[in-house]
Image (cartoon, rainbow, N blue to C red; front, side):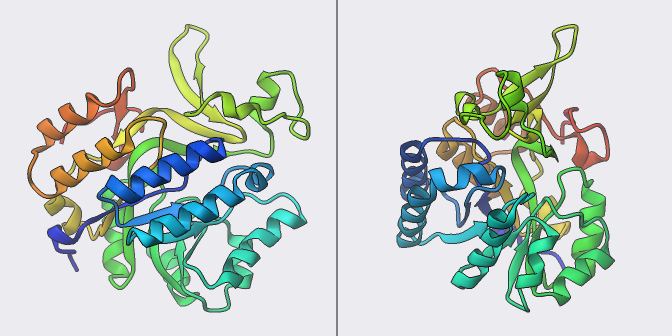
Length: 302
């Protein structure tokens, strides 16, 4: 069942990067006051070591966002590695707040409580998505490498679930037990000194020929380019998509959200939208190849 084009909303994913508490609060304050975003995912999902650093700032930001009328969703860790981190999803569930699950192990604590299935769960077909629905899933964000045709098939098979599409940002490609930032600075993961805070958008990886290839953010591997979904609202609604997810970066995310909103509302065609958006992304290449079933780093004019 198609979603009405006018009802496609924008959501904001969790911040992947190690931003300071003040930077996070300033960022979410602007989102609360200015951004045409309905749903905000918040929480440390990449590295459990970083979670205590920003707990207070995130709690205050969550309250500020709620006061502004935003729906706040707490996102859980992708790969908890110890007892404390494994307990974090349990603690999130116990709050009764809306949550997003990003690893299967934490689902044992849900016991039927509604949840969002994050883009880090291995959901590649209708059967896997149906299992999530039986466990209490009410919304899911598709894996970034899934082509739109596959997402359409899955969304149509489970029309009662809200389907989010990763619409903007460096694509999260892989997660590791090793910290690339620590290794790059001659440190170990246990004594990393949180050096990932030196790269607010992640650090670029180049080939031996000096060509940009990927990016790393602590234990996370990302695409070098930023994914930009330039499809109009009609095409998205026909695919069963109810929301585009924007991933936060150290740029003017309010301007990014406004450009997406104007495009979805029909005020900008795809060409004008991309032109306006690129103007706010100095030096960033864009891509969307996965959505067309091609290499993710490619750009396909739609």
